[in-house]
Length: 524
Image (tube, rainbow, N blue to C red):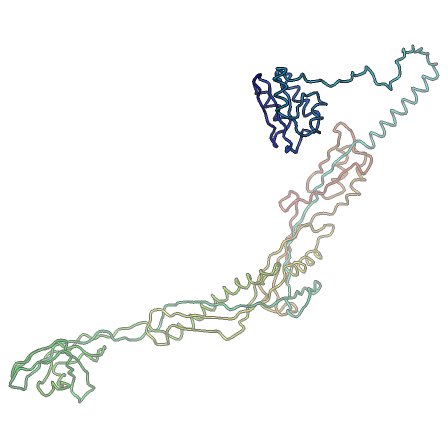
């Protein structure tokens, strides 16, 4: 039996993967097995015809084993040799030595022309007749009329023009007082009153100031040497900390021994002493200390042959009433600064609100805590101040509406308001308008000369570009010469139809050339 290669079609294979596999195989006969469980593909004759073409091109001898009778019939119709099983294919090879030749399906020949096409006829010869002169003349006149109509239609419909005008601009500034009324429900543009909402929060400041008060402070302990005399016939030890003092006839000043001393029998010994209290009262002259307190007073006597010195008094800084007032004033300024910024932030939490720069209101008794009392010795005085502060929040749109109306009512004649921006100033010190308080808004306006675009177009229809520029420059206050562009560029005039002329009015900006300046500021 000749060598036969088997190729099993997997569920993922299609006509193209099998074709590529056949291309890579050598010349041995190949038996392609299509199992029944391959569900997708292999249901069209083209699937098998493609394999026949590949086998013929690469001179491969192939046959198919197809278990599914439906697919087997499709492969047989495509001209492919097909067997029911591998055993049947092996028996055929043993008997014949080769697979059956593929049977090419008959292809119909393409007809030279469709069946429904009529038989071609021989072309007939046309006989040209000479037209009479009068007909030629009529045709020429009609042609000229048509060409004239086309030219007129072109002149009316095809050309277009664009005109750019930059009107003269003027800026002016007005300071507008705006009254705030907490009881109002909506802005009154005529009276210049806007409603407000009260907002508040507690703010705290911590300050420290240098004290300026002066007082006296005693520093240092007086010290010196005393002489103990033993009244006994035996040695006596005076312990450290034994209290000695001046005589009781004056205000007693007390001292204590700083070391233990042993006094011989009926003898004397010196000991160092130190005053118990600071201050110059500890400084005493010689022989002023003559009393020993406690049990030791029965055994020894004491005196001070030398003066006791060392205590001093000095001028020190203390808290004065002025220091406390100054600290409170500084803390109040800090709290008010924090309050304005904090209430601005609180007002901005609702979009479109702001807090006018007005005098804020303290709504409750201040909480004050000083670090030292008046007269207390210290170089610095600390203060913690807590205040509940409120303010009136105003909607920006309300304030701008009032200011915008004031700018519009003061427009120069023949101008229109093109742009405006505002600056918010201080609160008025006096009541200049109805309401709880007033603040000023500075409005900066940019106005441009009015230009009627329709009239501008009508005035330049059919004119040459240079004539149109002169007409527009004479009729309207312009900041710079008009820009006129005609399309096509060779067309000598502007279009005759208004719809074909496009006018653009460029309002410009504050820095545009030709802009006039007006800075009248009416007093508020």
